[in-house]
Image (cartoon, rainbow, N blue to C red; front, side, top):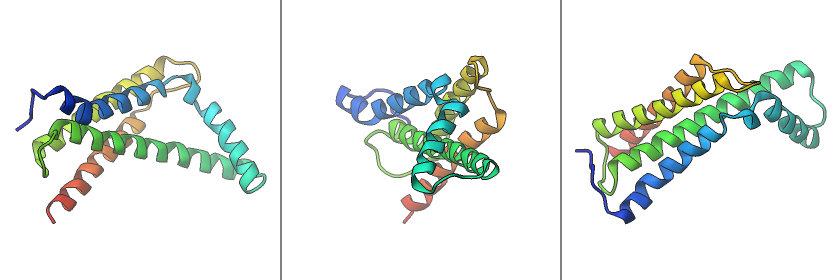
Length: 148
């Protein structure tokens, strides 16, 4: 059963982290997290760690890093949403997991919608699907580990 009423301490402990992470992901929808900006800092970092990189290799690595950021960001959001929905209860429940995926998907949809209106950003259905998949994968992992 999904808990609707929680004490303030439980809201702070279980729901606030998910809300703050959601806000951070939506803030990153803006131009400051555009491909041009992330490419600049990644190029700088790689230049200092490995030396210059061919443009073709850098482009592939840059895309991989950006997609990995989606997986990590929305996987973590899925986990935080699950925890927010579950509250102080223990275990795994399909309704908790389903709601967590819906919540993460709502943030992912808002993220892509915002990006479609921001200069130098584009909303992407494939990124939305990647985000949902990451949240769902975390639910699957959580289920497998909770049954042990």
